Length: 321
Ligand code: SAH
Image (tube, rainbow, N blue to C red; front, side, top):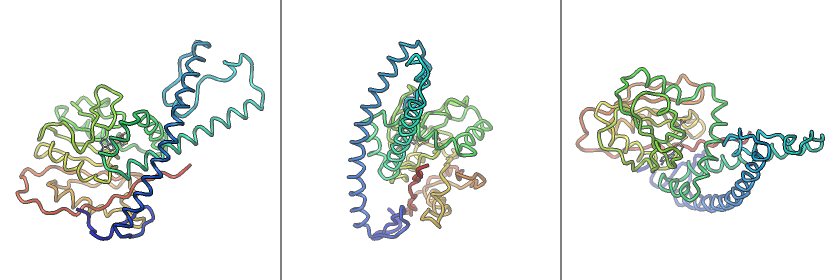
């Protein structure tokens, strides 16, 4: 249950609105997003057609070094010179540069749209969204990588460093693993979970309902993945699968916890997790872009669970650059 019954924080604008008004705005937003999804589907068809053209070009020139990120971002390593068999005129150069910039802007817009969708729907809805169009997941992660490249430190690397100092026998669950960087970097057994699996080692599911066995995990990780409006159900799931004494690590974007801009109070967030049955071990605010919370699952189960007041976590919306 949320803190406010009749009033809900509409964090995007930082104002407090009644829940029926919030519902109305959410419905309106959903309609807008559905429309944008249709547009995006049409664009994807065009992108796929363009990939086919690029592939044909590669056959002609014998080059095969085009990366999937570049395809997604609309960039090709192939120069037009290689295709034209002559150097480009200055007009052609200007126009291809414009096209490139336009494509990058378009993919940035799509990234922001998918990102907003993931922060404003439940995990179940997000699963439906990606299952309907799995290629949106690649589009999302190409944009995500671009965003993250400007961060001075990647939270996932801080978590990997921490894990390397723990026992290699610890079994890890990476909730919302993205490209499964943790599994690729440590010796531990890692269960990587995400909405879409492009990799046979990633389990595709809504992480509120994972297939993991109860009390089987030593370390549960949420690295920038508490995106759904029902984020508390992901944490409940981590409580179910963790062994007593097991670690829960959460890295989240700092701005989501800035009360001056409608963000949650990190203490309220931490208290809610403690009420779920965890002990707060450490909070690391030293990084510019994210906060790292460390908890352990209490050894003793709480017999009568009290109602937990989960603070609303405002969506992390990226600005157009
Ligand atoms: N942890 C990774 C990726 C972060 S991006 C890293 O730090 O590199 C957030 C990821 O959480 C996305 O891949 C998104 O698909 C995933 N995610 C969001 N909600 C989810 C849900 N309900 N179930 C499974 N994965 C989810």
